[in-house]
Image (cartoon, rainbow over all chains, first blue to last red; front, side, top):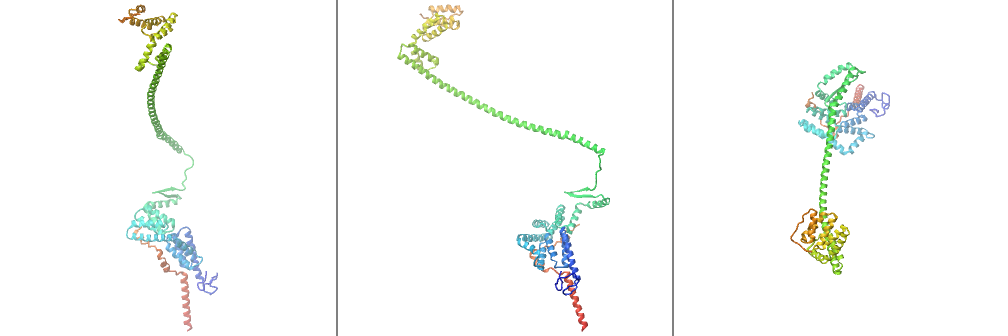
Length: 483
Length: 56
């Protein structure tokens, strides 16, 4: 502390040791200023910004050179969104103490952040415009402007308060309270905020006053309650109310009743619903499986149709193959016929080889189904070698017949009959061989053929006798042949 | 009950940054110390005048 007269540093004495002026009052003024500064600092620390502003202004009224108080006042102004006021205080502070002054840092910080400063200026202009709108009764526009202001500078208390006032005027109490709560978070000691909050509470909860009165009465009886807001409801929770200890009989009864009711609800409400749900699940699964089964069945039917189609196609192809085989067979028969012809032309006396070839042809195919040219060649060859071959087979057959080998006799005689059908002895002996072997059916056939083809001959009459013995009446035709 | 019009009168336009210079210059920086010094000075001057008049 320096002397106001000579600027010399003061001591504990009540006068200046340099110039001798009385500094008692001056010291008291300085100390008062410091006391207000301390008070302002304490209030600022607990966010009572309004109180801090008042104390710091008081401090500066006592001592304008209290740089700390002025810097703190600027900081508090800045916190409430009053940037111009804050800047003013810091500029004055810097002028009072050009060096080692934190205000210098604050100013540089703002000056370096040009965008921030411009934003703040815009918010101030918009706030002023909102005030103009309010004066013009354009409250909706004012609300829009203030919302824009607060989006850019959320700590601008005056804007919050004006917006709250507009909400109050529109009787939108929830929004009013919301804005006022924000104000309270920034500045606990703002009287306007407190007043508006009280007004909003009175309008929203008119019974609140009565409750407060009742509460006051109850507080006298040490019955305190804890009240808080949950949405639109006010929850009043008693404090220091203890439940009676121990279990009473009624509690047990209530417990049992609760259990019974719970079980009943489980059985009659929850369980059927669960069962129904489970059934529905099972039905759904069954439906899904059925659908899958139907799909599989359809696939199987489709596959079966394909199999049938392929089978038919296979049969058709097999038929074609058989036809080709038949063609091959024909060719083979043709080759056999050519061999037989070749054998006859080369060695006409070797009728056995020709006969064997002809028999092979007869075994492989039906002569009547072959071409006419084939049949002509075959029949011609057969007529050329037939009598000779027939005689050979006939002799062999008779030899076997005489030896009692009727099976061999039948075979040889049939071949003889094949090569020469006009020999009555061949037919008659063939019939006898069948008769002797016990095959009466074939025997009767050949006997009848003797009677029919060679009627009037001894063989025919003998055949008739045998047929008569067999109980068969022979059919006689007019075509009689002599042997 | 709060009167909107009355409450609105309590809100004043905020100073813009362009107006900061004027605000600084127009700020009354007179404090209690200045007043005390002035009073002391005036008192001394008055005493001096009285002393001079008595001497004459």
